[in-house]
Length: 385
Ligand SMILES: *Cc1c(COP(=O)(O)O)cnc(C)c1O
Figure (tube, rainbow, N blue to C red):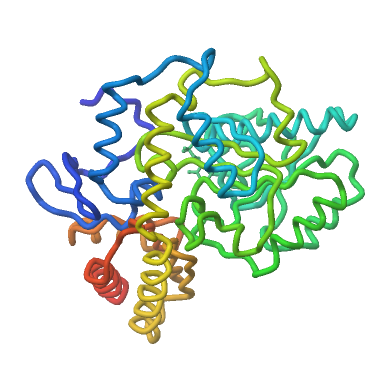
């Protein structure tokens, strides 16, 4: 029996070690990781440079609290703000917490504009986390089931439907639009090319904040440092987590202009958030991404993997659509495929199934040989389904 609460249902495998794109279990079997701990370990497992900074920082200083200045936190804030064209950063420990900060910023923005009961427009099938506010923002009844009463300020609109947002333009309570640039948890849903540009225009016109949740799409995952850079727009608030620490827990809420000034002393905080260790690691992650030209590999491998899937699955009836942006890849089938999770594991590959979509989030450092193994194994399993 287990003393863990039964909120997860883990597969029957225990990994004890990792090495680049591989994971090794307690029996010594080697698996290819095509999931990266859900878009977290983009630079692979046991990256030598990351191990080294964890060791050296732990020998200096792990934690002091935010009641004192933290040099690595200042540097990380500056680095992220310059990369994302933002003006201010708040650090926390997860994606949900980054979105909580974004929601609190929206309330301050609304109250500064005499809106007493602000509403945030969010998308159906979106995912923003598991805290009470972020699960209320999440447009998925499965995530919300059992947890009523929800935080009531969210209205869920259809994703990639600009008219659905326009319909709220004369509602004086709306204060923000909060979206993932590409919906991850619901199966790599990529909107039309100019959707986010249109959303930004509406937000500007109405003094609404544009909050982009790049917890999954950020940090080079989609072939740009941030997915919204495909649209050449600048959100008012940008949330990050997953890939930022390569496995060390860190979240960030970045903001631009007026939105970056709203959290004043005493209004928000986190004991662990932005401690010297996690900030040092995140700085190393960003440095490796730039020094090793990781974006080049992401785009190369994205094109390669997508082309191979498209070719091998072109005459397979069960395949409805292959979607990809960088190394976020979704293969949607016309039938249930939940058994593929265990079947892929038996073939020593880690994947994810969400609804009827096979979702792949391979490490950003994946090579052609590893990509071939993933594509060939999945195509074989899909054909046999
Ligand atoms: C994973 C995810 C979150 C939640 O992040 P946690 O670190 O699990 O709290 C929020 N938004 C998006 C888009 C995510 O993919």
